[in-house]
Image 1 (cartoon, rainbow, N blue to C red):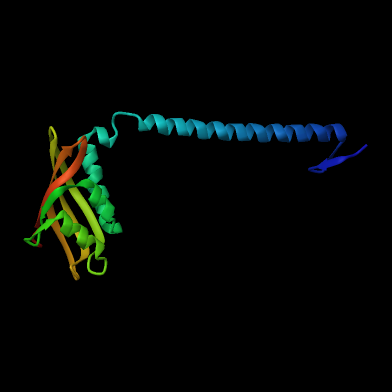
Image 2 (spheres, rainbow, N blue to C red):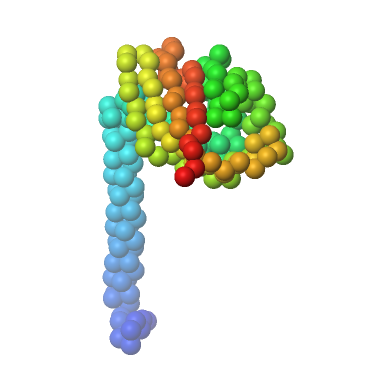
Amino acid sequence: MTKLSIDGRSYGKDRRSNLITEALAMRITFTGTWVAGIAALTMTVISAGSTSSEPKDDPVAWIIQYENDAAAADLAGDVSFYQKNLTEDWSDGMSNGQFQTKKDLISDLTDKAHNVTFRETLANMKVRVYGDTAAANYSETYDALTSGKRVAKTIITTDTFVKVGGQWKLAAAHSSAVARP
């Protein structure tokens, strides 16, 4: 009779067959449990994603997410974010006293030798919605290379959003520099 030794114990051929069967059953049970766990997690994510509290269904949440995504886009130099989310006639009254168009902004963002954001932090966000129009007010502290000059300051900003074709878009912005104490 063939003997099998596990953990210092000897087993006969029948015990070996039993152990192999048990091991396979444990593997199948573990794999089945793992697959069931993944399926349950997937269903949870899918069902959570279909709730009506998604930012796209809540203008305030969407705008807050937009503002945070815009800061991330600035840090990443993501031009496509602004191409997608600004109205074609967007304008910005900047804290340096000049106006900027969407075309100007896209041009600046593509000139990475002269325009780079190193740090950007948003605070004190307040969003108000009036039908298909909304305004967001916040303060922003940033450190950036702007037109080849290093600029580090805090500004206060008002962004005006409009709903166009069922999508929220940024139509205008205005910022003022905060005086340093």
